[in-house]
Image 1 (tube, one colour):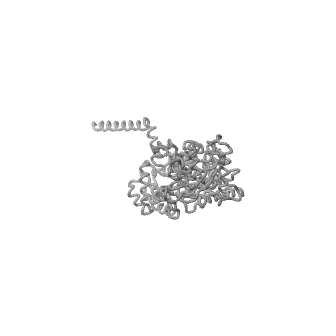
Image 2 (cartoon, rainbow, N blue to C red):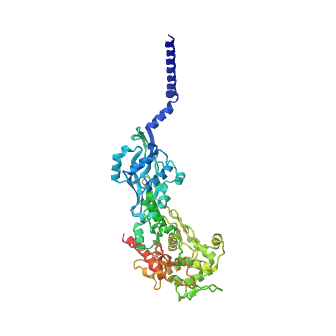
Image 3 (cartoon, rainbow, N blue to C red):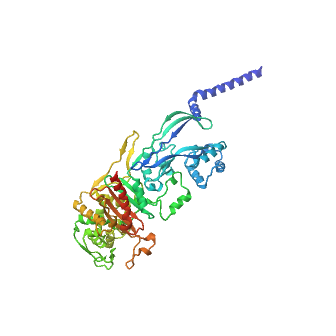
Length: 597
């Protein structure tokens, strides 16, 4: 009897314990455990937006999204990652670069994020894995859209490229809007317009089975795709400029003088931006990085070159405006120039000299001695202040990343940068676009456009319009300022002289004269290294990489300008024979094709 009572007490207590536990689980903590249960069955998944497309001015697609397959591993679901990767490599080729990328991404991602071990799988590779998928828990093939640049190096320096988001970028972006997004714009238009191109992330609530496979979608909030961009860029001109450069390295910048739209922006050599989208191999990157031709360097907006004689029209304008010279005032050129009280001779490019030179002839024949004297008379302070108003020494403000400002030297700059005083001979060198004076090709083209517009300075732009989500198109705003302090007659005098550079009998660019439209231009040659006083520059014996750079600036038609252009050909030698014909081919393609349409 006693044992029955004890047993009954034990059973009763056990039941009470069970009831208490059930009360705790089902009543007191009902909400908590329901949530945990749902988490095992229901998941919130981000839906990354489709990146916006990029077009040129004629609707040619420059950046698109193409479907691709990647083999991805989820660390949380994979017991032994090293063994898994080794086994996978026996089915699908996995090289050392793939392993390094996986290791790097694994450090940046969470354990439950899938990480690619191979990208851009072929159909055959996808099929081989599908047959063996049961052997690899936590490994799956993912279909996604990858950025593609069909014109490759022709647009590399303009568009830039997208690449995988790194640690630094993770700290800067809105993490909630980049959930599920793996790529971001790294440079060029892709980076400048990242917010517009990326779009907004969506969310979907899905029911999954024990293996994590989606069974059905419970709720869906679709992503907002990125906005499409339409550029001013004309790929016909871009291709013409690249073709005209032939085997030379260099840059071409062409601007629509009416809008500031960049019609062509070439930096040669270029590179294939598609290599960077999923991570470039170490070998390929080293080849690009270590190349003497520097294909990764954007010469058009980052290359800083002495402008040489292309700056002479602007300095002539400064002399007229400051009242230190009249248009018809003459200077004698014996082939060299000496500062009062100094023996050093500053040479003219024409050893025998030009004789008596007024400004018009000095621009047409590019007389150095005339500009030595003009620069000395102006002085570096007035020269610097006037050229600043034309945009020299400052960024143009183009909607691209990485633009450099060039260098417009001054007393203050040299005192701060070199801790030295300014010397009179340095003013002479500045007067012919040499010495410390540096410009970018885009900066030269922008200043030329200002000259063509008789003082209207327009900020250059790449993007013409943006497609908005409501189906409308928004044009970008034109920004300009007018240099009202310059006498209109002075603009016309300098422009007329530039026209004779091309159309005059003694002009240094007379070989590119056109029968179809008028051209105003200026040739230039910039030294790569200094020739000593008692030495002679002999192009035939100089190593190619030490030969002078060839430059040319121009705009056309003179009466109603539509295009301004700057060409820099590295180690090309002569602006008139090498750089000017390149500009002519680009202007022909634009103006003559435009006339036929």
